[in-house]
Length: 337
Image (cartoon, rainbow, N blue to C red; front, side, top):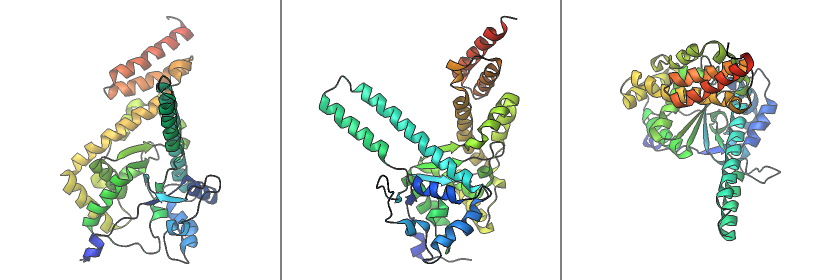
């Protein structure tokens, strides 16, 4: 049996993350075929070999030329992914998420500006400066490939993962789970990803699920062809069958899941809710513009499919909106026949 000293039990977790500048740099360096595991050997290790350190240690103190923002800062997003993924796919998902969050910030800033139009000039300016300051703050990603030492991976006891690591997830505040392929997401079959999702749920961290943009077209096609099949795919979760690269990791994580959830069935049910929510949100995002701009029978088919999906999730009022627009488009294109 492994024995760990108290220093291991109370060791803190490095909460430094990398900015999107670093992510973009590696996106350019990586080949289209690289998996994350291959990128570790071919891209990260050579850059950290001399110091035998983490990539964030190498980048510490460097700044982005155009803005002066540090390349390394306190992590604001924890990236949960499978090492068997295409490396570029994961990096692009990170960049897409940051762009999406920036759009939300700008939209909220405009709303706030409008709300304060009737207020005093000093109050308006102060609020606008605050909003602009928030929007300019870079996002920092805790990505294990960049934030762990790939030359000296330390063994941690179960207690460390169940306390220090879990607490760190809560401190970071957001977990970005990259789902691919959409019809058989690899993360829900990997022990580490399940553990990271469980930590997010236990600490009430924000859990964001994202599908790589390269798979959106195939997801849209599947919506048109087999809505029930999509729903079933996302319901076929079995945490007990999840795997890990190292056998002792699987043993540790399975014990932790049983300890915190009581049973694998409870874990399965807990995972279904964020997956169902993600499924509904993604389907709506793909088709929401058609509620105002659509006009063809094909548009109507997609709206009807989304309505069926939402209805199956119990979102009947929202589903009705999609059904009604689909009917309108069909009547306009085909008449009342």
